[in-house]
Image 1 (spheres, rainbow, N blue to C red):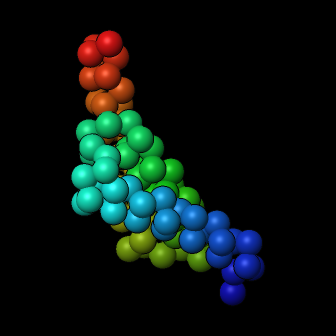
Image 2 (cartoon, rainbow, N blue to C red):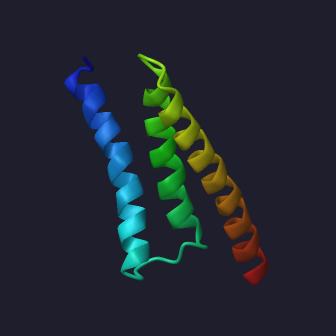
Length: 86
């Protein structure tokens, strides 16, 4: 069983993902902007870490690695677009 501090860290990762999703659904944030992708990338990276440690969970590893990679790619695109718009 994970310690309370590890569980709180996992909860933070999940809350980052959910905050981004909720903000997008309520049209408070644009999914093509950096903030949305930062929230997604950091949240999925945290959960991805715990999918590997302390016990490997293949399904969650695949989900979180792909989610993180997509978020990083989208963040890179958003930052490029914002830079060119400035």
